[in-house]
Amino acid sequence: MICPRCKQEIIDGIKFCTKCGVNIQEEKERQATEERKKQEEIERKQKEAEEKKRLEEIRKQEEQKREEELKEAEKAEAIKKAKEEGIELEIIDKQPEPEVKKEEKEFKVKKVVEPKEKKEKKKKVKLKKNIFQVIFGKLLFIIIVAALIIGGVYYCYRQELLPEFAQKEIKDFESKLQNVIEMKKEVKENKQEEKEATNNEWEVKLDIEASDIKDLNKEVSVIIKGEKQGLIDNKTGKIVLEPKYTKVYIADYTRIAEGEFAKVTKGIVVKDIEKEYEVDSEYKIAGEVKTVVQSTAFETAYFYNHHDSIIYESLPTGEVSKVKPTRTSNLKICSDIDIVTQEGLSSAKDILPESFIIDYEKSKVTTKGYFDTKTGELVIDCNYDEVLEFSEGYAAVKEEKKAGIIDEEGKTVVDFKYDETRSVHNGFAFAKKDGKWGILKVK
Image 1 (tube, rainbow, N blue to C red):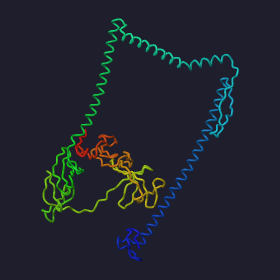
Image 2 (image 1 turned 180 degrees about the horizontal axis):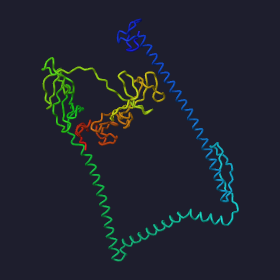
Image 3 (image 1 turned 90 degrees about the vertical axis):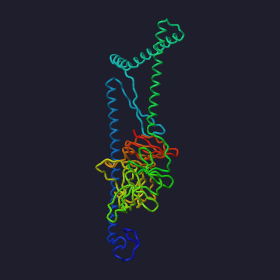
Image 4 (image 1 turned 60 degrees about the vertical axis):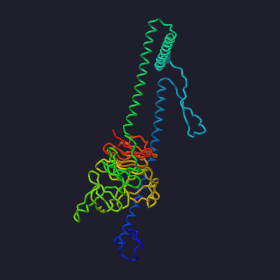
């Protein structure tokens, strides 16, 4: 027999599970009740969707009816105005074209004999309507004449046919115009140089030899050469602890020299084969320590379902549910995912329940982005293949195998031209290009 909670095999006929201690019969009843509630919820949502669809169809029919009534009213108003102005309108049926099935109607103007006063009135109206055309024609004529005059004068100037004083004035004007063009070109080139210089301010120098550099804290990062690890300063790029240790990490530890009642300290620890040592404030190896074994803390994962634009969060129970907004605004990483539940529901075509378990083998996780914990809404689209958490208002991201840095508005502040980038600390960040690492300085 299988335990309904822990899914472990147990002896048939017993009342309580020998693995997790649950009452088997009560657990089965509880699960059956939950399953029944889930099914009722799904049916309720389906009914709501059907009712919504029906109401939408009724609304569309009413809108179509109102549009037809409005057209009829406009037609009647047009006929009324035409009659007042002495124009007789007839409505004739137009034969439908091959691709059009509905009967179309158009207005046909029928000439009638009108009094002389009305004809004069119509001519005045026509003149008013054409006044803009007259003005436009005159402006166009003036522009053409001016262009011809300027062209003729310039031709005479080039052929030196103008009087001496006119020749001199045009020559001075041409010289000033050329100066303005040169100044504009120079300003444009200076702006381009400033832009390139600004971009170059990020890159200090790519001269650090390392297999990898990983974030540790604001002051230092872990530098890895081959299979050995050490510490490197985040601001200067100077190695403060030679990479000759098995592992460098932050942990809770007690000093062996202080004996049984040693207090727990949190700090940088290095592992050298089997022994672990404390790293002091000057990044030197101190006494031997023993790390404190703690239970693994549960880390919440966040998922973005692009089919309904909802952020989901993972729960310690293994289930996921809609993310709950917090009081503070903070940008967190979320993964774009096509959700498929263990019950076989698909986010692409089904209404998902309030909480469910994801079938990760069938669910497709793609790119990553960021959402605001205060609103629970996506603020930076899931366009990136790899991302790191925001630090000092910036985040290191990777897109199409190229790395860069973005700000909290999703704007690119470091171009995607590096192989790797790391988090910003105290205004600096490590970056890798062409096999070597360097430091980027944030303005």
